[in-house]
Image (cartoon, rainbow, N blue to C red; front, side, top):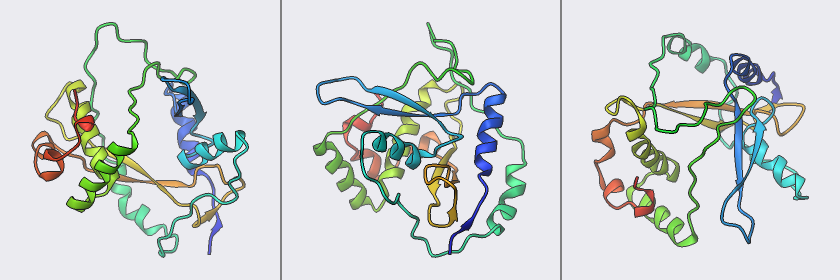
Length: 214
């Protein structure tokens, strides 16, 4: 049964913004007659990804009575947090980007990043991606994340580094918040891939060209 929870993540995001980092979620909408996205930014301290998307859809009069709920049967527990706490308290290795010519000013707590790479997959490409993932028994998220890592690597100062990722997990259904749009999420830390691992296996060799870095 869900129980009332406090939004600790909101305090985390607010603290990061006080230190000068922009913590927001970028949503892109391409109008039927347009070719470039219209970007909307929502504060991550007030929304998670699902909540932010629901907010924008509701602004357009969409009826969303109940947002997606987690189906995992495990009850809420503090044990995983306590078990992972020593790892969270260890010093982090920070990856640094290369300096680009004409690089725009970095974002701040009040200014979102000025540039964003984006890609829209048409229906044919989407079906190809799903077919490859099904044949290789991998999730679409893992497949895309692996290729995003490979595409991002040339922009790192240390291109041989292991690239870690943090993946959000929807926890709606395990806790109750005053608003269904608030942060109902936790995170899974992914070890990532090294360069040799990014070029191994059928998933890479059979991948659609649109997912390979140009």
